[in-house]
Image (cartoon, rainbow, N blue to C red; front, side, top):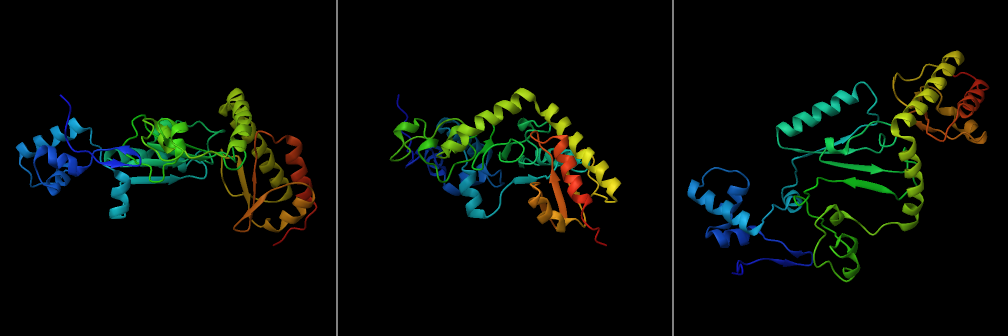
Length: 294
């Protein structure tokens, strides 16, 4: 027998709502809300009917809409500059454990770690990664990972790439993809075509070998700085070296073809797979010609 329960139609396809659940269970909308949110004041028999209706309809709470309505979310965003830092690693694990204990979701920005540090996306509910840094990809390339069952989040601006059949979704998404593809956006094609070659090199080399290479160069730079009388910010196990009092060296380094950045007055050098010991020595050679500022 066909299920005649009411459903809601949208440009993203059929998705049961709390109104549908209320109609099927024969209760009010507020009662369904209380059951969904685990609030008190509902009899066991009513809870059972509502849950049976939820199961029959395949209802899932639209957390995206809930977040917009309430202005808050049970999610924790974690942006760590360097997971290799002895402080950030334990902090990350503590946040994961606390989030799971309280039923919160975790989102990790892995832009500064993916490609050269051991990283398991499965340790977090969601990860986002800008690939232009350690993944050596063109700007415009980024990645999102979500749980295998990802229907608790609803894309608010789904375009044709998010459709179950993208090529049939140019003029409106009739049904979202059942997988993580529902979060896809129309890609910047050329950057991704280039990125496949960079990612192939990283996969072939391996993050462990890349990390060892990067750290060896960073340590070579630290040793050279010590000879020149400079003391970098303490960051053991990091391929990023920040040096107080050398921000003024950026222009001279740029003229010499050495590209670094300056953050809060500190010279900041990051060492990648494409760098060599000769690059480090050239950087130190230029710094050795500059007057020391007190």
